[in-house]
Length: 461
Image (spheres, rainbow, N blue to C red):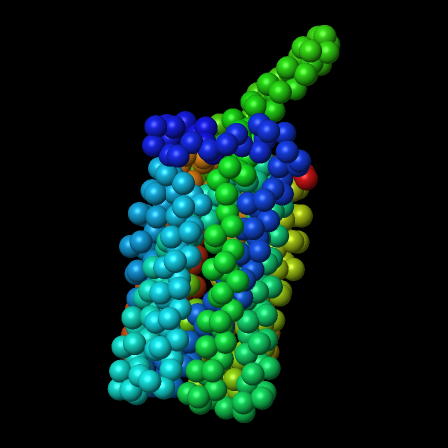
């Protein structure tokens, strides 16, 4: 990373990248391993204290869907305000420095959240305290996410990203399943009822699970990133061809030298492709955020599920998502990443429309609806790794921090539109909100059609 074009005069000089030093196989270097470990622990913690249960907790405190939306909206807004600055700093200076700053900020957020959930705060001020604490957690995510995405992309070989990105997404889903399972066990011990006390204790345990994730943020090293192997696919292909040509020249093999040339069809750097992927992510986030935080309340109020059943559903769904993610990756090697992503999104949208159509049968068919929701959620989310790998394959290393900040816009969509979703649920009900979400998700998927013939098949590996 120390040799990124245009950054030499500003970013702190670093040691030669791993590729240049000839250290081991670059596909799974130090930063990649630390990133995967951090991803698991951060997702595990957030699946407990920032997942579905916080919506139920705020609803129990305030009896207001609108206030549920305000908490998640505040998280999203603070995230999207901080992320552009963090992304620019990660590109201009050091990615590991930004991650260390995020670790320090997370300690402040941790203390505020523990205080907000503790009995020392009067009941009348608990919602305000939660609003401040979760706003701070949004800032933490905005601070570390752009640098994390950039340093992970810098540490994975171009043209073969989907494999490690699929594993990364699987770890997110595994952690997202483990968190609700922790909640199930705790509710089994504390009483399977929707009450403030048990919910508060589960959220505090989730906050404690952040500690290993915060420690891992201190372990990243810019010097461990790859060189040209992790750059734009065309640059990586040219570098590989040049290395093969040099080896052939040294061996005196003319035919080998001719065979080492980069293929004429090597994809070229393009901001159009990352832009389309980012647009789809942002629009999908706006649509999904309207309902995502209200599925737990739908289970609680409309389907009359207990806390343990609700948490169990949020545990099963990520496991199904992870399994389908591996299947989607295998299919993409033959069909193409964009083709598989579009097929998955279309199927998920149709299943949500089916849930809307079955409104009058929600209670009698609640078991089938739960299975339908799990299938819909798993299919819709199974191709995130594929689209993310497409984006990073076509982005120069010097811009990945800033583009990574766009993911915070997606998170803002998930969180920010929750405020509108809460208003919509209060006034028009869950059915209307689900229908609006499915319609907007369909519109969000349309831009991906323009990439069907632009993104080549990946090299298997």
